[in-house]
Image (cartoon, rainbow, N blue to C red; front, side, top):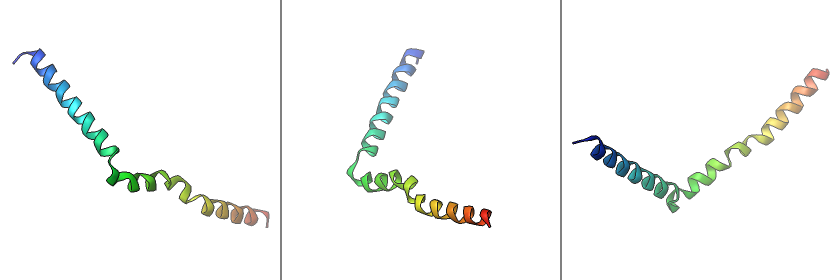
Length: 61
């Protein structure tokens, strides 16, 4: 087995891994999970605003 055979096998492995990741990421079964994960940064915003106003009112007293 020479280096070119190893490079060919590594290329095939990388291509199969890439196609597998693409199929996993764009599958319809994962859409709900990814939509929930995409909205996570916005889930805590109202609580942070309330917490900041309470902290500001404490500082003024």
